[in-house]
Image (cartoon, rainbow, N blue to C red; front, side, top):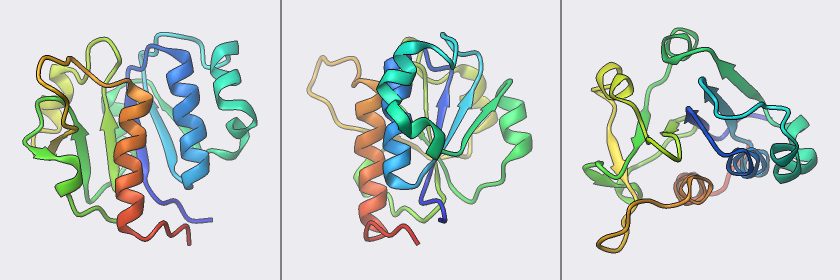
Length: 156
């Protein structure tokens, strides 16, 4: 089955979030890319519990660093999801196999990501005034389902 979208986690820190994202990718035929460092062991019990048996049905790629990810992937569109974004997530016209990159739960996207991907659009999810962030797994869900909706929930 062909992929719908490419979800990229830069330096994830919380195993259940990554497990939930893994499960989300399985249910949307999306590929999951994880860029190290990672704040946990990929075999951690809480990751497996959150991902359930979906772990085996997701094409999971792990990279040693941002340069490794950039060297091994080509993309037409790579969106940086950040509270510093300039355009709202639902105002983007997504295409199959677009890359959506999310930062760590603690530090977001790094200065290195912003520098090396300076030409990638920065998009945001609206929040009420004074809010700091949305849970990572929820943020991925919000953006991925909007993108998937735009291609009519197609998985072929």
